[in-house]
Amino acid sequence: MFYPKRVPKFIDALFPQCLWRKADDALYLTVDDSPSPHTPELLEILARYHVKATFFLIGKHIERYPDYAKAIVQQGHRIGNHSYSHTRNLHETFFRDEVIRTEQLLSTLCASCTARQSLFRFPYGRFNFVSLRILKELNLTPVMWSLLTADFDASVSAEAVLNLLRSATAGDIVVMHDNEKSIQKLRAVLPIALGELSRRFSFNLL
Image (cartoon, rainbow, N blue to C red; front, side):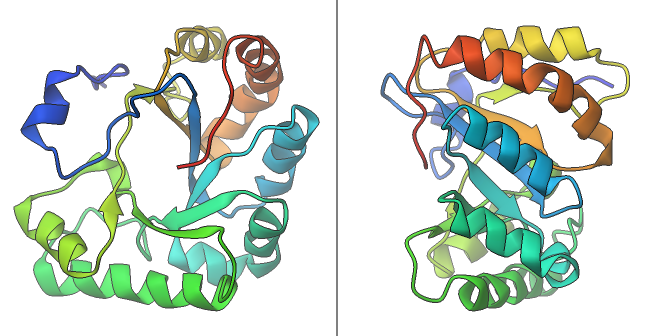
């Protein structure tokens, strides 16, 4: 499977509607596919190193694991929209419904708190001009990334994931995943990476 783990900077100019990285000296950790049965473990690791992250939540997962979704907010992390069903379908009507349905769930989860921001991450990073237009109409900012940890990829070792995290540079938006495919690697490498990166960077929320 080929995909860029480090997104080249010229992409920013091609799709300026999307947020790919930040122009400062901090790191921005993001977690996709939450909540899941593995959310408490990820939250514990982040708390151990006093790091906050932005979690992109899937609507149907909020419905299935409401207590884990609440825990993300209660522990001071930020939340964004990652569609209702993590679909590849970008058909206009279907996509709009996926986004709005999850926005409603996020509103219920976080009715009066600053954790909820107007952020959206495309499942699989796939988008087109129609989906970008819909997000603009809904006042949502599409958030991409500059560094992909590849924690979900069975062909990528835990050591390789650690090395990708170690390669982070100032302003990077880093993607990890809260799912069965990723947890074993993150369990092994995230404490090491956070310990090392905390000596080089501060961690900010999007």
